Length: 394
Image: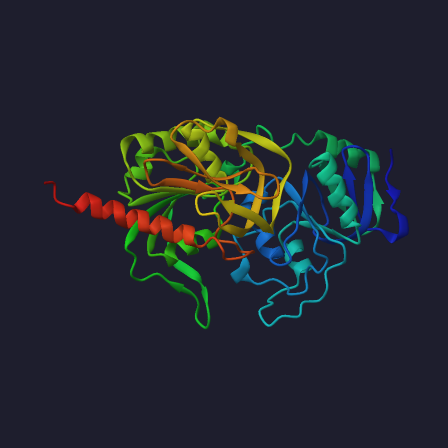
């Protein structure tokens, strides 16, 4: 079918695999892409969301209508460039009105090859995703308003989906590096950690910068290794603890190489190990559990999670489309946290060792700070481990 003009002066089109079409105003890059469509309910942090490596292979529908109003700035990037394939918003991005703004969102997206579409009924889209599951879509931005609809729908149908897809290798670092930057604080901004007390190896499955900052802020000297690092490479740094980062894709696919590494580290040492998001799922797989694809996942900064061991409820930031099947947790592994939205697993720990992980994002960025204590718990576990190792044998 030849290209045809979009209705009402539309310059962008979102095509779902079932043939449903949404037209709107395009911004950012002039291009076409295909991905899984999800929605995020956060009221802040669109830049952090777009640069979160966990969104690889996804287009994000923002349920909050005000996007672009604070512009963008280099300090808020969670990685060097946007990783999400595109963004869908209700209203066209506004001019920035914030003292930290260094650039307009639309220009930032254009320079980095990411597509946006505005003027859509995001409530309708969100309802469809919740009811039918995360759809495969194609998004095109064409300033002349011409679209080959048949080709767009075919592109959406051709998207292979995230199941069975290892995306960690695409977003991980190319080589190891050192990290010492701490969390942002007024007035100095991001200060360096100059007196670390714990050596941590962080395995990068798609790590957000604010996770690394949180580790540095609790006294960690952080060495980041690629996702494919072996146990031998991890232990060669003589760490006091091992951290498993967030990341995108199907955990079972990433687990093909990550799980043997974790199992070997656990077999050879009794070091504290802490995992977040994909790192949580890698931990669960290494301990013998299974993961499953969710209908529409959890994406937002307002998700209530209950700590089953204290009874405390935390409001958390989440971004995941797969979950650990709590019914498959083996003996010796304790479920520590659950989602109060749907009861899905949000945390585990080994019963007899300082090894634990959570599905949500205690570093936030964006989101609340309720769960920062988990980084302090990791630091305390490393301190206790070192004290125990140094204690004289009677």
